[in-house]
Image (cartoon, rainbow, N blue to C red; front, side, top):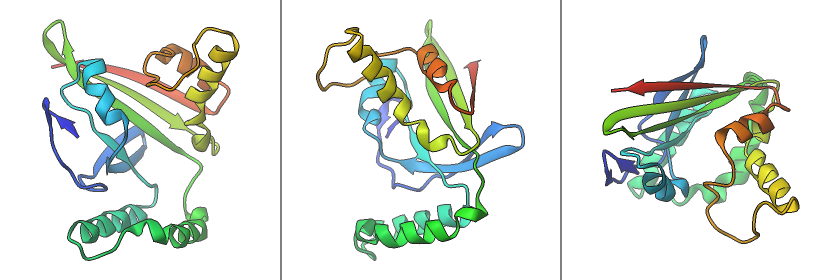
Length: 183
């Protein structure tokens, strides 16, 4: 991950932090890998870029952290072959969760030479969370169909603005919030 302007190694599902999605609703999230880690530092001029994911049920989150710990020490084979089992267990406990979830995007960098933090929070309700990842593709497809975007594989960092994404999200039971901090 990119932290304080340098590349550092971190174990997936470690470094758990709690994020408030809305008053009264918090979720724990741990470090994960994502292709965007390579793109965001230069594109945004960010000093720190971390990706985290979390599960609503704390014991599931802790289980992933424990599996990661064992795997990092060579005490467990790749967990990929256990995916069908993990999916089955998750299905058994689906009713213990809710239809609410969300995400926080936080970028730290500089604005006019001073440290600054930008945070965007999304709260998905009524089970609409799984539709969120399709929104950028929907916007891109519409732009391609309208001839506003050339076909081809490349990073999609500048296909659309945050405002366009929020507008596309309006068809779902989703609310967003933007926060700005200067240090």
